[in-house]
Length: 255
Ligand SMILES: [Zn+2]
Image 1 (cartoon, rainbow, N blue to C red):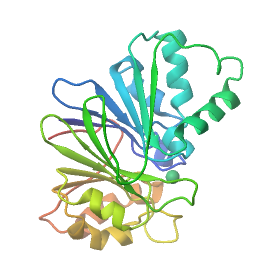
Image 2: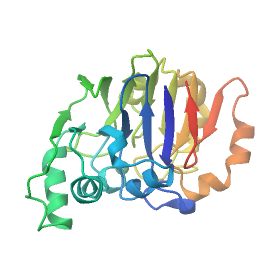
Image 3: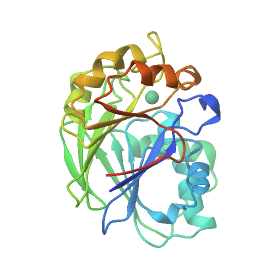
């Protein structure tokens, strides 16, 4: 299994990086993206990929830096690199309605046109397990938005048996810990150095979480400029027996 970091920044493109998003690929299956923010189509092209390489996109929650790039992906598949194979879009409850609203806001003249490919939409509630493009996707409740929004932490397992957990955006919560436990790789947010930094995890959380999260390997992402500026000092503070990496755009990890 391979993880490619498309983008590693917070919502503000801190340190000129793209919005946090990832591509996962396992043997014999199409690649899938995890989150697709406003800058993610650009990030995909920077890595030499195209929308046609993706069999599915998983969306952890309905904030623009995590799903705001979907209209551009759909438009690309209609007009620029025409797609004929189905595209699976799966993610937090309300994804269908919110994506329709976004398409209507950005491309009102195109939103209701038929697409020459099938778009398969799956909305996922915490506690559910789905097969998406051949991957097993397990969802847990994140603590990041108020109802009716239900943000997710996701655990994705491929045919190789490897499991990658994604925090999405969240504060420390049971769902995050359940998603992380025993994962071969945990890709998690570290938005600020310390609270307050919104409903996010900070380095202050991670000083303890590094040993408690229960993942074999940890990649911290969704980094603000301040966190990125401090990476050498933060790595020096981390226990040496933990495999910790700070994400950067274009980082590839083989599992
Ligand atoms: Zn968010």
